[in-house]
Length: 322
Image 1 (cartoon, rainbow, N blue to C red):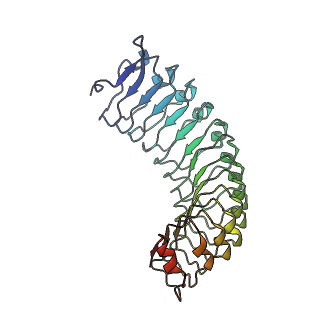
Image 2: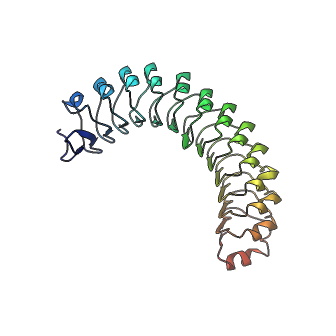
Image 3: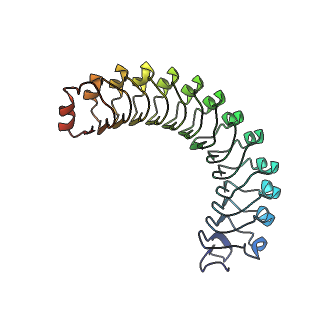
């Protein structure tokens, strides 16, 4: 199948600089690929490509390579020598292994390997010290490589969801510039206290694990805005959770949680509190004074008595679901 019209963008002197043909049904690469030496971007997401030609690595200006959702079965080792590559997306291709030379791409800023068949990632990934975003979600990894904690510029996102991990390495606590951490759909029962050192973290997703408790150190995450803990086995929250003064969303649904600590009254910026299908029998009065609370969800939870401040909460515009 030929390239769709206008898929090649050229600079003013006529040099092709970008190849964009996502979801175009392509099964083959352009025959003259090696001659397109000015390409800085290739976006062929969502096609039916079955190979990644080594010629891609020879494109000296290539900055971004997007191949998510193809059928590429292997990655040529030559890709590790691509001199200018900064953004690489190979997710959704069914990859079972990666060449060791891939870890030579020390200039990478983002690496997406999600939705593959990877069972392990070698410690060589620790050489990618320029990474700002790393996605290893939806694979078959049996552990989180501890060296990920040594990626000093990992600031934007770290996705590790849906792998079946049974432990979280303490080294992740060294990612003190990280803004978003997703560890959902795994099998760990505890978290390392070191996660309390993630000073820049704004969103933490931990739902559908086997957590029975949270470390007290999570109360130090003063930049945290969203904490998602649904579908775990948590029976109580740290007493100092009220220290999360920038919290906007707290999701505790489907946990055997019996009470909330009084300190939740310190969550002055909280907008949404989800307590569905918990075992809470009494609500702390401090919830009534949260000025930004927009939604309190109590469905499938049966407090012994409804607090007398609940109607006033509704009257000021908070949605209360029972």
